[in-house]
Length: 64
Image (tube, rainbow, N blue to C red; front, side, top):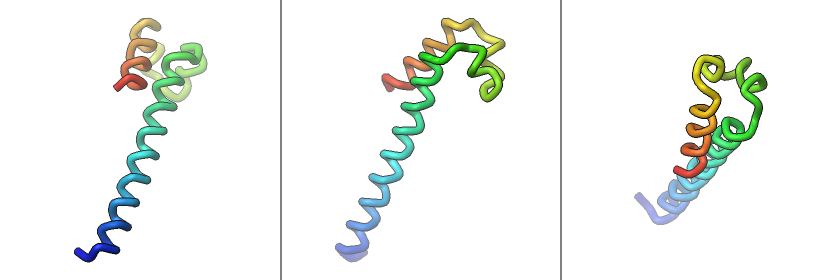
């Protein structure tokens, strides 16, 4: 692989990594802060488990 191709590939991997980290961060913040009733239409499982578990999962997603 040439040096130029390696730089482009490295840049693309970093871009994907930033996008995935942002998506996980947004999902974690939503689970941590939004009311359960607002989460239920998009995440039906949130209505089936205790609210504290949903908040805990959200915090884990943000922290890790």
